[in-house]
Length: 351
Image 1: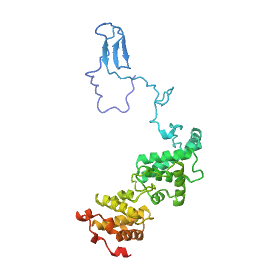
Image 2: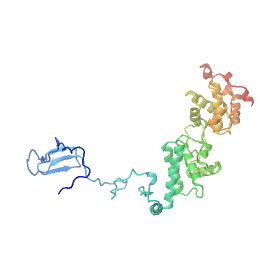
Image 3: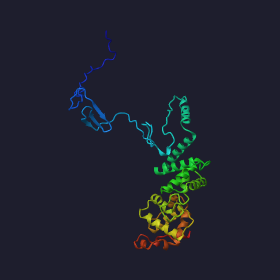
């Protein structure tokens, strides 16, 4: 006896439409030469061909190998049937790059946290955990500073070498990372000043300088950490002209401003003007001098905010440049109408 449906449908169910087309499973692939009802078809994945095993006739080409790809992707030959994971990272050589992540969803019992703690201790040593944490800090700080991945990789290589050779034992981790980022920026020709690195990493200038000096001597970077492109700075330190690109961009100055300002800085260095001043101070004073020279005036406060130096320091460098303005300004600039010496304010030179 059939039971009545408790909630009958409002409309009777419609019959499903029959499929008008579909694969014919009765069709078999046979060799047109042999015509054997039980063909011997061989798939040669090395050449991508479908071949008759009896007569050797090629029945198809460009077939896809659907089998498991048990190959080794390691540099050394051997049994390494690894088919999972991302590309190997040379910075993580000798460290297991595959890990297991345990979920936090345990119903509030706290079991997941204990399992995570036990798994992290069992899978990696303390040195490996410290190295991974340092790599994460370097990546985060480079992202905050809008630095490219190249600088991040260089800084990681420097830190790994210093950690392996125990060069800065006892120094704070933040100071070592800051020194590595500073050297990496200099090597990649995108220099940053000590003050900028200190503001980013919150490391004191004294500790950063100690770590930098130690790494500079250990890595044989004393002749110049960056092997600077400008042969005029024999000491290899960051030149004031290297900082002009960022400062001019922040001040929204035209493209033809930077080459003229760089020429003025180079000429002043040859004449010994403002020797002993920091590159940041020279860059700020040179920008202030060139702004009025090319009739692109910017206030001292604007330049001070961008360069990170005091207004008095900028005016002091401007005073030194103004005293030798005839030697710093090229005649061709005046003839072309680009520069005029009478645009330079006299009152700033007396302060």
